[in-house]
Each structure stands twice: as C-alpha cells, then as structure tokens.
Image 1 (cartoon, rainbow, N blue to C red):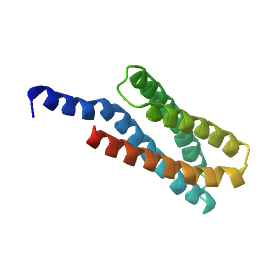
Image 2: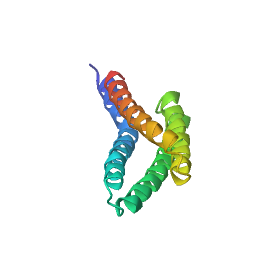
Image 3: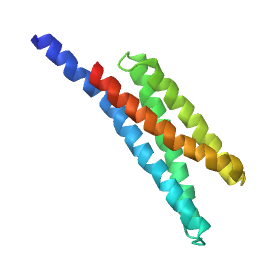
Image 4: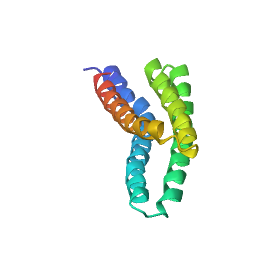
Length: 133
C-alpha cells in the first residue's frame, strides 16, 4: 500500500466521523423516548416534560445532522443517501412531534418505533460504508 492510498483510507473514516457521531447521539435520544413514555403510562406525570424536551432536542439534533450531511454531500465527502436519509428522518421527527402534541398516539407510537429502527439502520449502514471506502 502506498502512502497515498493509506491517507485515502484514513480520510474515508474521517469524513464519516461527524455524521456517525450525530447519528449515535440521535439514536441515544430516541432510545430515551420509550422509557419516558413507559414512565408516563405508569402514572409518573413528571415524565411528560422529559418526553417532550427530548423530542424537541431530537428534532434540533436531526436538523444539525441534516445540515452537516447536506454540506458533506455537497462537498462530495459522503454519498447522497446519507443526506437523503437525514432529511427523511428530520421530516418524520417533525411529524412525530406534531402527532404527539395533538395526541394522535395511534400514529405517534408506531412511528416512534420506526424511528428507532431507521436510526439503527442508518448507523449500521454508515459503519459498513466507512469500513469499505
């Protein structure tokens, strides 16, 4: 392996580090949501502000993820699917917050489960992609 290819391999992991970090943060926030919802359903009313604050923090963190992924895609440092998935997740979280505030739990709960799965998939896909490039 030449010096140039070694630098290119290292650069590959570097360009994904920010997005992978943001996805991990968002995944941890999404993992808190079922816990706070379970506490709320168990009669612990103080869990409602926690659930709402984490939901809004997730929305803000996903907005940061969208901005970072779009800029990195624009600079051709990440593939387009990274930006596309980030935008899609942000839209879903905005809808999730709207459904929760309007007490449309029949939509809020299953979409929340799908968010956990989607962020887990995005993290796995980013991890795999960064190892192959």
